[in-house]
Structure formats: structure tokens, C-alpha cells
Image 1: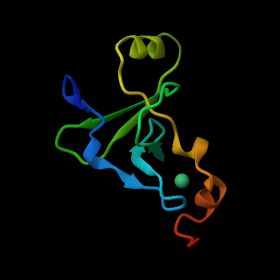
Image 2: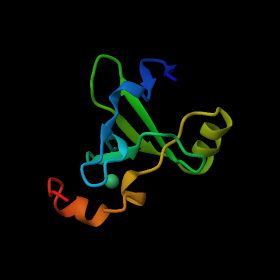
Image 3: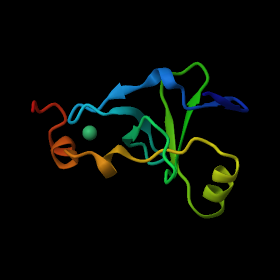
Image 4: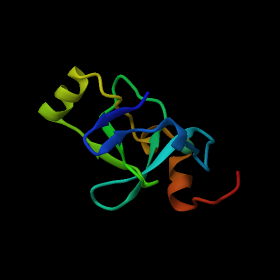
Length: 102
Ligand SMILES: [Zn+2]
């Protein structure tokens, strides 16, 4: 499902990738701090991360919502995701050696 807000498109399902450590479906995004962050492909009830794709560009932006912004996003039933780092079974290995074979 794709929702549009102005010039931005919320999460495009075709941009999925796989976690190189555990094989889970993730979406690579850029955070407000400029870091690359893997986000779980499927939205979650306890998700707090909004993923957006500027039109015409392949990169995705992720923003962690909290407080009133998070409440509003949930009230509008926006798809909210969780960080893959939070539940990747091989997060430590993944952080240190992204291309390490199993
Ligand atoms: Zn993983």
C-alpha cells in the first residue's frame, strides 16, 4: 500500500532488500543524522519509524516518531516500522562485519 503526502510517498513495497546477516526483509534508509539504517520491511503494531521516499529518487528517509507525532501517526493508521537492528538475531555481527559470511 502506498500513501502520498504532498511530494513524498510513504514506503514503497518494491524497495525491499535482505539483511545480509540474517536474511530478513529490510528497507535501507537514511536517518536525520545521515546514517544508513535497516528498517524491517513489514509495519508493526509497536512501530515508531516512518519511512518516506521522495519522488524520483531511490533513497528512503526514516524518521523515528515519538510523543504527539507518534500518536497522530497511529491515529491516521500510517504504516510504522521497527528498526531491524533492534531485533536482528545477528545484530552485533552485522554492525561490525556487514559482509561476513555465516
Ligand atoms: Zn538481520
